[in-house]
View 1 (tube, rainbow, N blue to C red):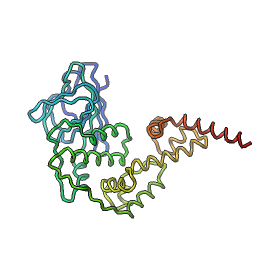
View 2 (cartoon, rainbow, N blue to C red; view 1 turned 60 degrees about the vertical axis):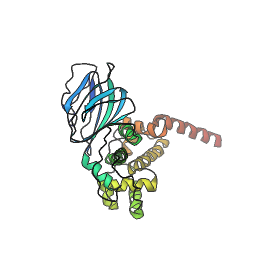
View 3 (cartoon, helix red, strand yellow; view 1 turned 90 degrees about the horizontal axis):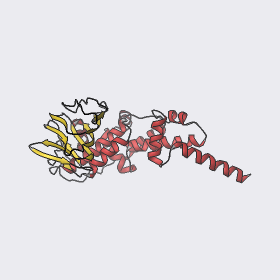
View 4 (cartoon, rainbow, N blue to C red; view 1 turned 135 degrees about the vertical axis):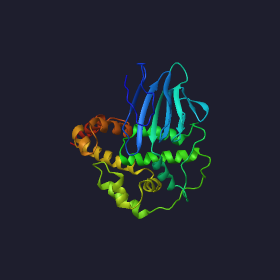
Length: 295
């Protein structure tokens, strides 16, 4: 059994059943990541001071919230507003699994201001169980991406968009289309020159003069992707160049700014569909064959 107390997860986590488990991270840039499996009762009544946004991955997740009994099945998203009392238990004897994000409300508030023409309040999702595609994609991507600050910026924007979409009181107004092209070019040029390391949000804010969330919104409009994904691709492009030159995976991992070889291999495979070792082997063999043919 793997068990860990989560700062945001409330009380009643001590479990005697060896089939139950929980894994969670420390809060990183305002977000805590939690993954768990429970049979029977999971949580007693409690409340968080964060948004709790979870994706049910297996079984039936059941809970009492705002005077109603709710259930969530695989693929559905549960959104619990800060400071709302709730509990949690398995809807069937088989148990349930889920992945959850605990997000500081101030981050969501700051992000939605970049999408409104006036000051907007925090979104409140009246129906806590939803099939909201933006939110489900955000949770899935969050557990696949790294937890660098630029990745968290992109995640917060995805969550803010999904929460606004799920709250009927949020006016569906077009996003402001103004682009600070000069600032975006500075951001892109800076990322191009820093392709062998992790770049922090504060650096891009200093380079562009934009807030991290406004930058994330505008950068996607201009470049079709987030600053985090743009930089990741530049780092992986650099890594491919090094692999073709016959460098070792360990050396390339370090020089491209990844935590270790396993981290590098995971991100490479997720991006290109093959491991860096296989990519290197195929490129080296192809290069050798071309050289022999030329001779």
